[in-house]
Length: 317
Ligand code: GFB
Image (cartoon, rainbow, N blue to C red; front, side, top):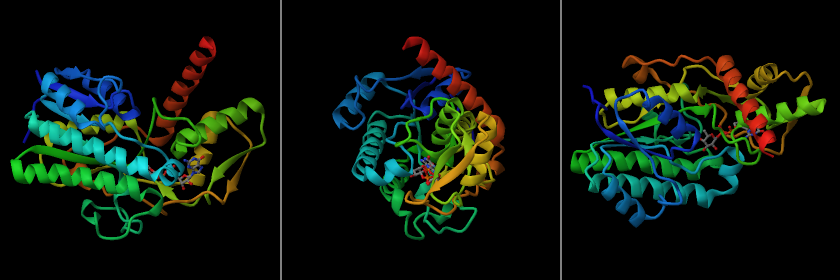
């Protein structure tokens, strides 16, 4: 089974985000035409705007990388935005894709769709087998709805709309704002600032015990293009690296990458979230894809990008 991107018009929704921009870079190497549209032209939460634009642009392929995303604090303090925005984006884009006869659509979810206390590593069929992690249940419900939309349009209209569930991601283009970011960009920004200031310690949220699986975003982009070409199934596919680390361990690795020699202190008023979410990505591996960037190298590349961005910001400002 293989789908050719050659000569196709591919719309990457969310092309300015970390995932979308990595997918754009990866697709630049394919013989397809890339379509993008900015938020000021089309608000993906407005059905008519999405329908009108798609009827005009006529993509053959759609990648739904657009989403309202954030780390544990953003998820737990902005529940309405996380459920509303992501439901609207999924509903509007997937339905408009069907109406405009989009041949192939790839919807992106997240490993937080799985029950809080899933078996580990988490196989695809753990979905909807138990209660969700409360800190990100809103986002998870919207992402589960996106998977089900793809399955429903496949079942009723025979659409080749598939879903991929990436693990926790990091890389160039990430959000480094401390109150809305995920753990890795937050630690990078905090450690960098502490190094420059000669600070003695940096604060880590929670106990440091939760385990997370981290994937470099360029690897994810490669996996997504692989799935577009090679996968046409109803069930969503996990996209992970197969190993996880504790938050305390990854903080120590990050300190080495950044060159910070002080200590860590824990803010136990902040939540830990899911104790562990290591995905079972054997289905993807058995199709013949594997990640190529280890955590240390991915963090080093991301830090280099971060430092360059800081330098640009300082030059401009
Ligand atoms: O990456 P993160 O925000 O999200 O947090 P989740 C992961 C772990 O790192 C949690 C801890 O145990 C945090 O308490 N942590 C330590 C920190 N220091 C920090 C810090 O400075 N900032 C942040 N943000 N965390 C999100 C979900 O869950 O993961 C989303 O809320 C999504 O829905 C995303 O699925 C991938 O891994 O806990």
